[in-house]
Length: 139
Image (cartoon, rainbow, N blue to C red; front, side, top):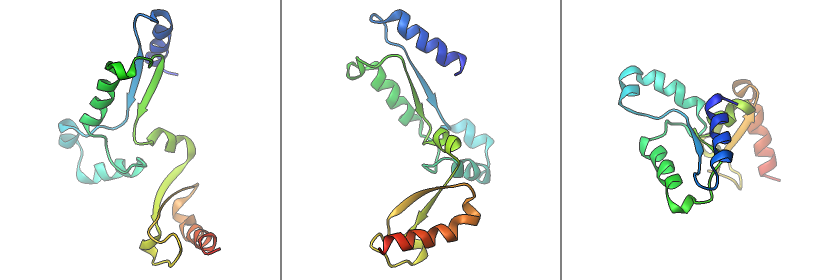
């Protein structure tokens, strides 16, 4: 646990019920500074590491701040809100990749369904995994 998060949690306990304290941990946010510093290729590499496949928009992160400052979040305190398109989760669980069955011209009851698969080596396992998905889907 990082220092800012630990401080936020301690403050939430110390200042309740008068003050609500939360921590927000955003992932990559696309902004003019990143656009200036990253090539399209560099952005693509980063985006492929994010399960949602893109950077957050500033207004998406701002919406969380607005919600937490509103009366709708009157019971929210002592929490850490990670808003990173599941990048942290993917990093903790292994490598993620997306498969669309219709891209592989499979005729299954799940044709066109997007599946999110967790494998240790997506490049080596993708064909075997697709065969297993096809076998399961036609049962």
